[in-house]
Length: 415
Image (cartoon, rainbow, N blue to C red; front, side, top):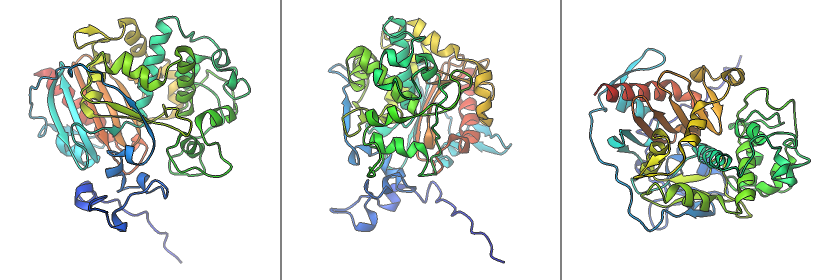
């Protein structure tokens, strides 16, 4: 009787440190230390601990200009959060810093009342260096969409083809813009990151985030019209990245602008970003809006402050209060519940943001492998985190990161 093989245990955070492993070092690097796009190694762990901080070396990109002005201030009030006790979801006791480290963080910034209380970097990431935000990108797109809805430029009740006729024969033909924004569309699309036959991999190849394959759509504008319908729109939430790129197509069509230019004009420049950001782009130069934004960590925290302060930051009202209020009100938790997120019970998903509906009004932007913006308005706390957790789905790190974030917010609120 043969014994089933067990999956390999991943290297620890310390063992997988990209500096210790020597990825892409030397002139030139040895073949054993080269990370490549063509063979997909840039997505594999532990190489990902280097590539997540260096995505521009693998795919074409489009810049998000920070503008010519000075960076907005982030004063410091250092707090000893490193030794803060944290009780994890399984009852295990640890510290805040260890919780951050054991979930393969590349960097974390904790703001309290707009001031840096805690900041750490690991591996290949540096304060000035952009890191891929993965699906945190979606919340930027949702914010732009909510802004354009408030300005009367997008009707959330309109059908998708009213803005993008190219999708009139797709599964989105009778979906409303709001259903796309809330991911309550009923389409035949599955998102299983570990299965390369999953639809998400077709999307990745079309978006330029994985090597192309003959016979498959080579761009987002080719791929999105091929997604068919499966069910009735508006009934339940199901997380599907294609919705975000449909929403981005609508935004481009309404404004006549590239998403990267919109983010620069409406968010990055007004908030006083510290560094330029960038989007990865597909073969036709379209930004991958489901997960292609790369930013430095402090600027991710600044964006969180914009939302925490109901649109006000850097001495100005960047977003109307009504825009942030619409985002934070959330959607129907009953439509969210069937998705089965054990770590997010009672939450909802609205305009590309995750909303807790708890007493603190916590909302999040979330991306695979541990990317996150955690906003606790009651505690006046924003936590921005980048990471390279070996498992894509956040259900693997939520039992550690969410209690750690909540513990930090509680401690800072208590003074």
